[in-house]
Length: 121
Image 1 (cartoon, rainbow, N blue to C red):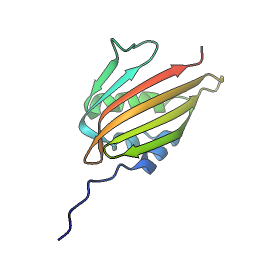
Image 2 (cartoon, rainbow, N blue to C red):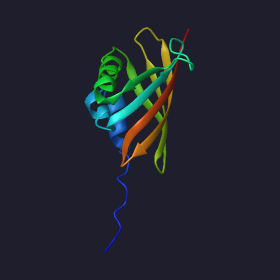
Image 3 (cartoon, rainbow, N blue to C red):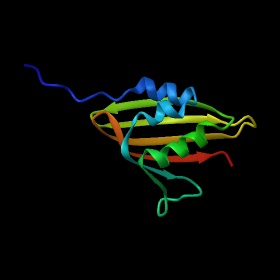
């Protein structure tokens, strides 16, 4: 009798969701009770934007990936129950955004996600 391995994180779904601008594909990577923190120029480290659960996270993903801009998964590293990745984005006017994410997993699903993002200014 073998031992079942923990479910693996689906990095190809992450890439398809980001680059295909598909919030439903991305949302499927999150646990029902996941927490997402965003730190940027408007929501600084002492007061990050925090979303709890798939409902709140879904609204944010639909907003971001519904915008007229390109998204590219640049780097993705999975080690055990942690994932780190960078995403580059560009608006039609040339303004660029870079986001760096650190993720904690449980049973192959995202339970904690912190993203730090910066825009051209």
